[in-house]
Amino acid sequence: MTSPRGQATVPLCAIFLLSIVGCGFFRPSVKDVQTELTSLIDPALEAGLGGAERPEGDVRGQSCYEPFVGPANGTRPRLSYTFSWSILKDGPEAFLGRVESFWRSEGLEVEVETTDNARILFSGRDGYTIGASIIYSSMEAKIGGSGPCVD
Image 1 (cartoon, rainbow, N blue to C red):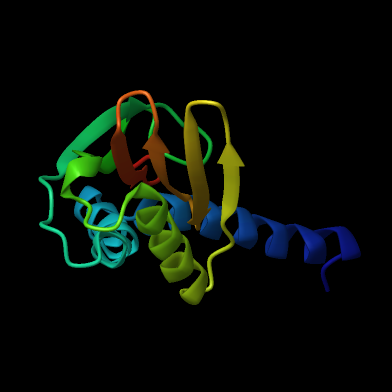
Image 2 (tube, rainbow, N blue to C red; image 1 turned 30 degrees about the vertical axis):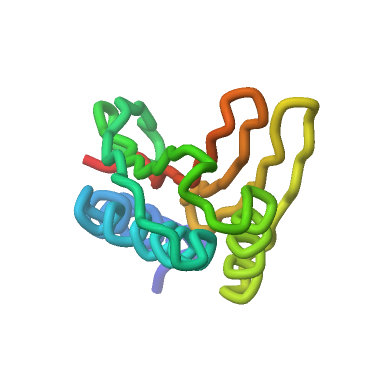
């Protein structure tokens, strides 16, 4: 017969072992993160453009370090689009309005910040951060985001 102390130790050890194994084996790959970023950003971009020609995207990675929940020497995938307002048929405010409506229709909470030089939307989920903005001084619009730190 085991003591109450021994009975508690086995489940705690099992939970610890599963958390270590889970973190090591079930983290998404760079490709998985890029796919999820694309699914969060590209449909919102299309909605925002309202039929305007799609700009070129910029896919990058940024070094990251998350020793407890991620890799010690990883990459944080990023996807962004920056373009002139001149491609927008009905202006930058309409672009942001459509992006915001799309993200809300997907169940995302959207925060809006307005400064003297910009109007910015923020959102995200499950370790993904996304946003869209219009910059008054440069007359540019931006939409993009980043994912979690991965190997």
